[in-house]
Length: 52
Image (cartoon, rainbow, N blue to C red; front, side, top):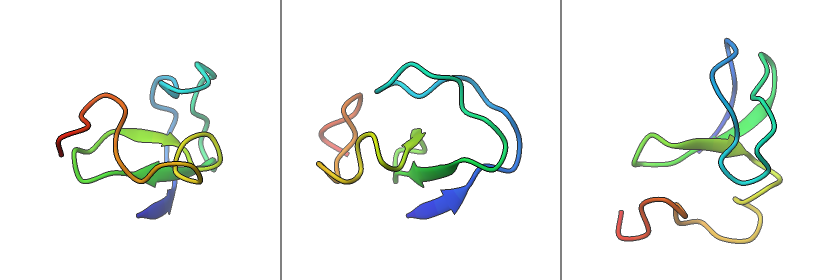
């Protein structure tokens, strides 16, 4: 699902940039979050948990 980050929380595992409050993110069923444009546009499965 698409969401907006409500607080700073770590880094995007795809681009390695810090996730900032207000960023548009993809929140996957495994609860991993990424910058939406970095991964979710290309693939709808988690690169860290591909079987989820």
